[in-house]
Length: 245
Image 1 (cartoon, rainbow, N blue to C red):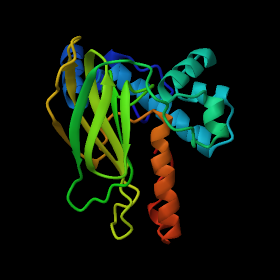
Image 2 (cartoon, one colour):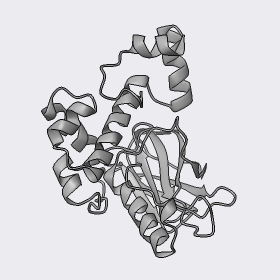
Image 3 (cartoon, one colour):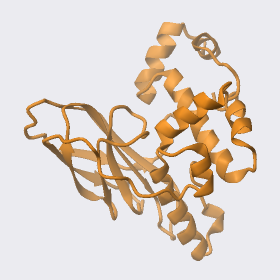
Image 4 (tube, rainbow, N blue to C red):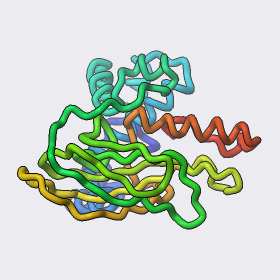
């Protein structure tokens, strides 16, 4: 996928490359990543588009074609729906978009839990959000920003099936992993229409792996920028991480 983002890759192509039947490949991919191969490919394309918007002078049209979209209208629609702003807006603000707005949902449930950091890690600001799937895209139904690992509370949670996703960046200047993106996930969490108490959950931050879906929501890139600035100030530019990386 990563080497052929601009190509029209089919499920048959992917299964053939992995030397699996289409059914077995799809089932195994879903079990490992939490989402379908098609959704994962789409997320990779949009993540690459974010990188190109910030690091090149290519036009939005050229970028859309380079990452596999034949229609700039379709590309812009999906980019805005996943990232939260249009491609042009994302480029103009250099990824430094406004903070997440308060959710419009009016649920009654409250979800409490604790974000734990991995041994040796030094996570900075942690964003915890509630999403309908395993990709951090679009407006979360509820979210909270923490100064670091610790307890969290998500309020106003509506009925439905949700995934708790947390994102952070290691900012420890004495660590070789400074600037390393960290992720955590839990779910699905089922919330009944009557609300009611939801048991506490524990989620553990860990370094992002190749099988983790990229975080598309633009606000999550701000932590990357902050980590890069702090790293540069500490004379550690070799560990800098660009937004969307």
